[in-house]
Length: 112
Image (cartoon, rainbow, N blue to C red; front, side, top):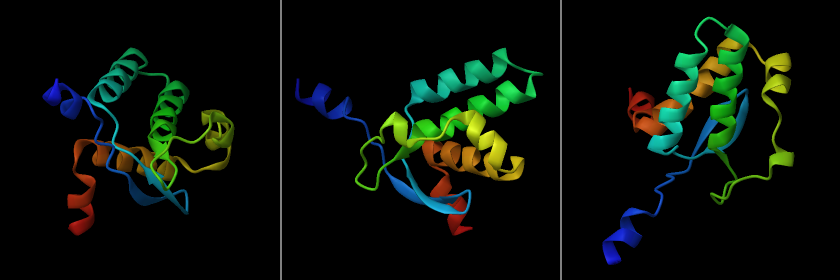
């Protein structure tokens, strides 16, 4: 029972990054969240708008409050709202930073 409790406790590793010109706090996504993201991407090849929305939703899912708690859905913009006001390059950077943090490589990228 002891190991089960220890090993099933998420290691969110919150970190503050700059996204869309703002300081935001993100968490590490679970392996299942990343696998579901990859499946969604594979299923939507060729549909640029849907692919962008899937990426933004991944970014939004990683956002946490500075104390590590999840923000209320009403406090988050929609993927469509972000698409309407942010540049594609900035969206790609935000999604890439979430992925790197989730795979454990964001810190390495920042060092180099």
